[in-house]
Length: 319
Image: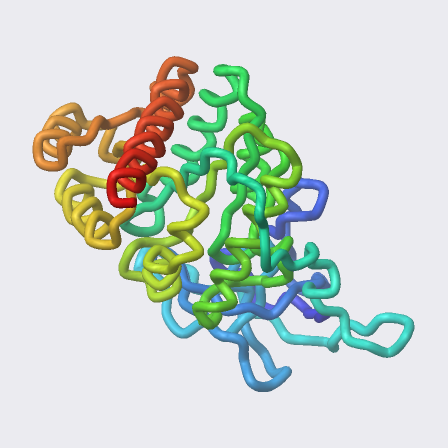
């Protein structure tokens, strides 16, 4: 829709398609997309039922009715008023799903090694871990694809991953969704499968997935427990802000029977936290700089190969 900026709040700029951040002024007219948002360090928002005044709830241009926000957002949300819904020349409303990748419901080829980066919550260090791991894979001579499978539409994460060397770079907006918050589980699973399948079809050597928010977020929890996620994921790199969060998260992932290869995130800034987490979980911790090393990337790929060999051996024995 086309909307007018009324009162500037937390979001005082808008990410443009070219990657530049445009400063906003009261009275500006902007094009935005309605969407829900779940961000524990920022806003919870839903799509309003009317075309009345609402808020800009994400810097990527997402409009919604803000239900709550973190105390550190002292200015509150930026207030906007819809001017009107955008229509195409043929009279149909403009919708992101018109630009979505072709849905992939069946993929019979072998998946490339796929590492999912998951975390305790927003701001645990997931995107940085994903970007530096991509860099390490590239340094190891791998062509790496990246997909962020859940979240709210914004450009910062995908631009960072492109800068790190990922190609192709996709996210849920490429599957036609402004946000995955409040989507049904089957729709989130379809987004995940479609994005991974398109990356695999592009011929990449490895795939890095990022799952937004934390293990207690409904859509994340449902996706991690799904057969689709288990089918496409070779390993999970878990990020946390502290050692206790790392321990709780790894225990939850092990309950889901997911293969956790190591720990990263904000906790790696503290050597004692790393020691606590490693002692309690038996897993290595990787700083951002370590993830960017070719040797670490090769080690993670070798670990995945070992898991697949062990699984194959177990299957042969069971057979």
